[in-house]
Length: 91
Image (cartoon, rainbow, N blue to C red; front, side, top):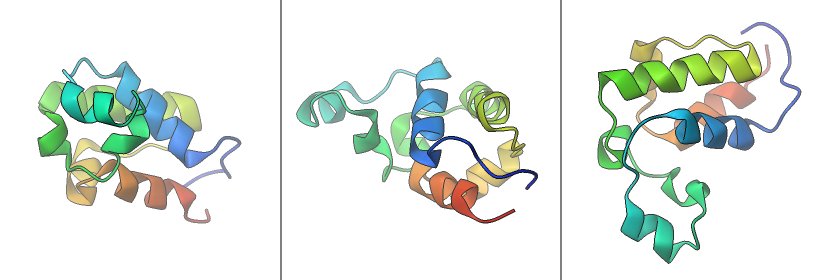
């Protein structure tokens, strides 16, 4: 990783999820008052990610944080919570 983050990793991941053209699990969102953070513990498969969503997510993370994660990195991490942990690691 390059530089230290200037924003909360949770917000970076939340914005990346918003940037993806995936149909988010509406029932889960509604039950959590519309908070995307309610999806952070779900796997990307449970959220409905496909290869395009992974690319959009990675591009959004890079643009927002300056940290480049490959599609393979994110797929290996399995959940948004794991991505948050990865972004939280010191440079």
